[in-house]
Amino acid sequence: AAADEGAVLTSRAGSATVRLDFSPSGQKAVMWHGHFTGNLSVQNNTSSAVDFIMDGGADMSGSFTQQGGGLYIQGHPVVHAVSSE
Image (cartoon, rainbow, N blue to C red; front, side, top):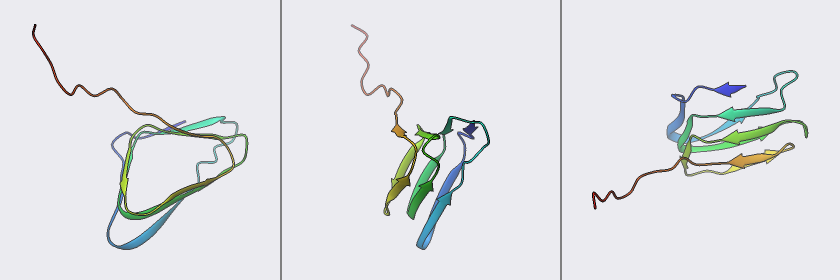
């Protein structure tokens, strides 16, 4: 299962906590392509059989915690400089 790459969870006001519940039956992994931003903390509690893969982004002032399962954070290549020579 994968979450929308255009999704943005953010808090611009006081601190907020997002409690994830990606518990689809029969899935071994869940991918998050969205972004966590702002003044928030993220909590992910899952069974030990479900992995959480995040490849969107996170720019938040709070914390990210996970109980159970595997946590994988991956990035995408970014071109920083290009030479025509």
